[in-house]
Length: 143
Image 1 (cartoon, rainbow, N blue to C red):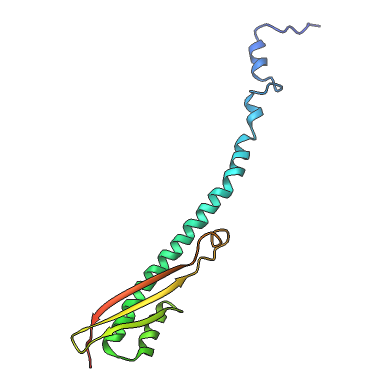
Image 2 (image 1 turned 45 degrees about the vertical axis):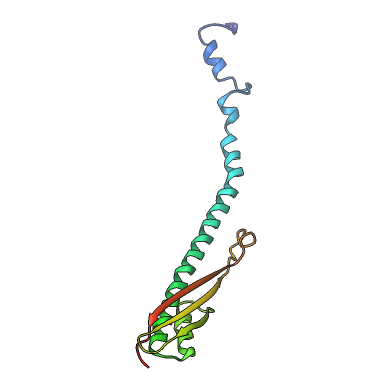
């Protein structure tokens, strides 16, 4: 029987696959998994924060459109209930007020405020609710 020799032509190959060495690539095999497990909650929180910002931006656009709808309604009628209903079709729960309303041909100004709730998990606790404001001016069309 041949006696195993520490040197020889296969010594380098055996040293490369020595599983007891700490700097062996196989010893670092779980490092990427551990790093991913540590970073994944942060990535998830950033995605939820981005989604919350997107929801607030959507509400801002809706408030602008609601102000335009309310001003359009205020140009043809002086009825506050109809003006408020026109705004709340786009943004339920909005606060509507007619700032000024002149005669035919003069401007009517409508202001709207709406509280955008930031209630997504994890982020809603750290981000306060945002109050959005919309403003629109149009000319009065009918007496």
